[in-house]
Length: 52
Length: 449
Image (cartoon, rainbow over all chains, first blue to last red; front, side, top):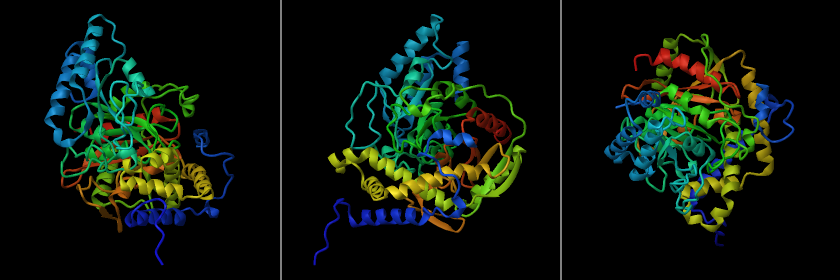
């Protein structure tokens, strides 16, 4: 059976780069208890920084 | 030759030099350094016409500001009405849009001579300046080494003494990285203090425009034209005009260390020696969760960049280099849940930094290594082996994720003579105070420079 080409049209090497990037991000994005606190009510805006 | 913007301002004010002399000298110096590949658009006749007009204004006592007649170079992702804007990408046609970015318009209104467009990493989507439709830039300190990026042409132009000031933009260190690698000064304002209007975005919630200069006081002279409210950039609403940079007492600094903040021995020695020379109070503190915060920065960066480029990428995929296409593809594969996690982590980073105690500025080396050799794909330091790209943003992204004002100042050199930079990060919105602290440090560290 032939492998289906990736719809992005990227080469094997580029796809390896994509996979490595996503793996690093997914392994890192851990919202464990260390980071639990009142969550922002909306996405980042600079005024959140006024708390500093 | 006059080296700093501050000296140029004084020379123009007292009539020691004309703008035409400054511009002519800058053109000569640029012609002497084609090997740096710092510029992607430069029209000598246009430069001299602007300088002539500035001289005429001064003759008539109508100088528009202290910087009237000073040559300033502009990174190629700022729209300029007189030069094409390409972001050094083949995906964007070479067009004059007839518009100035707000900051360029402010500088032009103040009489600055818009000198040239500078080379940059394609779309600012990388920190080496090795990927550009105009070819790589080379470091004036040693042309076998990279400038760093993405504002590498601006860093090279200032470090080579062609211009005393240039504009850059910074999403994960792109102003500070070439400033450190080339041995000059670079300032990223707090998010929302400087207008992004007309600066082609990489990641709109991380991007900050700012200057690269030959001296610290040069930044202070330029910031009134860079900071302030712009109705075309909602992030700047209620942003105050740039205020006075007053004197400060001996600052308390926190030297951030810990897992993920390793640096080479040469860089660490250079930083610690400079901190000792400064006489500032310095305490070491561990910053935890660096890899978590870095993942948040990277997720936000790729998602926002992919969103911005989606249509152009679909229309003209071959206009993007393979490495940039791979970054953009990664962004499309990050889920909404993952992006929201990244935003939550981002929100908590400020709490974590605040919890480090009473500090005037946080300090790190700007880079964990000195400028890498051209072609070196990997860097080893502190028990780590990382890509050259990752080594360039190693510390700098923290300031973008938290939106803090950050500055890189030279603080010595390695045994092979390559510059080492010190990065100071201030509290959000307190850009003037950070510059005051940086000036206090610079006068003690670089008194003999």
